[in-house]
Length: 404
Figure 1 (cartoon, rainbow, N blue to C red):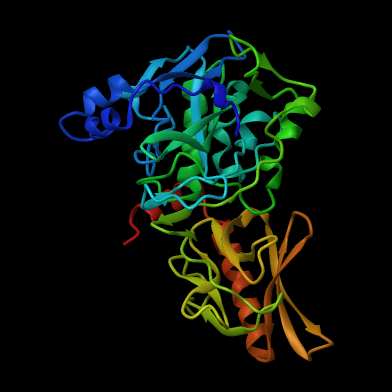
Figure 2 (figure 1 turned 90 degrees about the vertical axis):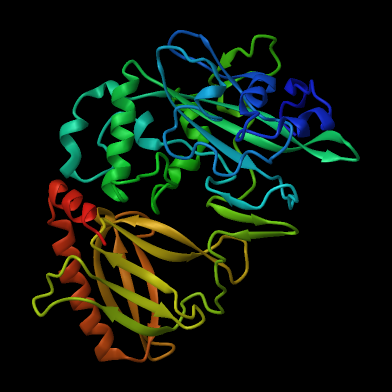
């Protein structure tokens, strides 16, 4: 349990329950009663950034502030943000428990990560189509991480049970930083309601490697052993949050049950069998309002791989260290080189491959006995991929805005 000594519990269980939560007639009293915590310290001016957080239970956490990143618990909970404060993420880690106090969606991963493109000067990892807003370098940030315990009710008292990891971003031009993040998400998601935060795309696993960012001097942590929570970075060997266990994707929570996001299906092969190829193209292969897909045996009606007019592909991948379970990941289309086929000598089947720019250089889309169909699908998919890549940014936004 990280930083248990920082926990503030001024209310009894009865007093807390009487407040009624963050909605309803007593919302003002609820926010007034929450304890105030230093959530971050600015690497640029050393100011303490303070918010009120509900560390009593998980009850009010699901769905909290998932869109704008302006605070952890809503604007009513902000006590002080310095002029450099740009964004804040929260990662609620259940520490292997099955919570009974909530039922809903936890939209962030349990394991903390950084938004890599905000912290590393150099080429921006998105297509050239949104370069105009990225040319100014003042959106680059320094980030801080902190951890606080969150309680549950046990035998009529509050007991620390979970951890919330807090990653905050500070820059000389926080408004431009927010614009960059929103533009990134609007480009790769529905611009009418883009999420402020997005799990690292496939091939960008460095976002999870927090020690790397500490070693580079881009990520700081609050030293909970000091009375004023001194800001520290380097040496990375002393960094306390480098190996956090937990889920790296959103998930559902239900009473007496903890299920992964969208109930990931199970597979029985490392290279699953392709049951069906999907294509929705016109005769010239230019219908960008449609897409191409592959279905696997064992996934019922769920598409194992899907590329549509959005500039991101969705793909099921095996979940590490979890036998026969898979999870959904996003792959940026500008990281996709091409689709290909090759014979599998051992099985006599044809393997369909997704060739990508990052290690290991390819992803398998499965094996099939439909040899000619696989080749036709790959040809169609490559034409469709090039058509989607050729879209200009303005075309993407126009098409996305009329999606119906």
